[in-house]
Amino acid sequence: MSALDGIVVELSVVLGSVDLPIRQVLKLSRGTMVSLDCGHNDPSQIHAGDTLIAEGRVVLSGEVLSFEVTRLVRPAA
Image 1 (tube, helix red, strand yellow):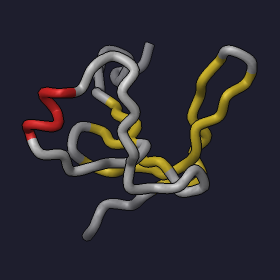
Image 2 (tube, rainbow, N blue to C red):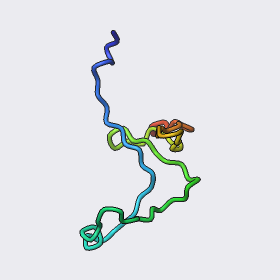
Image 3 (tube, rainbow, N blue to C red):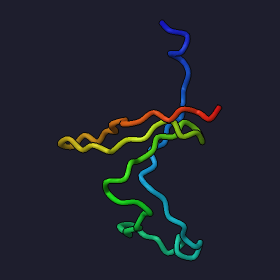
Image 4 (spheres, one colour):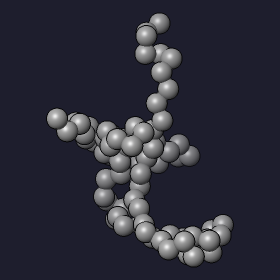
């Protein structure tokens, strides 16, 4: 057993973003489409906490959704 096995890290996959006024957010309902600031070929990002650590693409294989890492992002020195 590794010393790292018990460490939990929160990962987030960011597909894109959008700035919305709060009045629009309050009007959102189930099924509402929100356009993001990216295209379908733009890379998505993986964040560990608030730190960008990788870029890649979302892959759909049958009913399985996964993430393919295409680039690791090195922290600024």
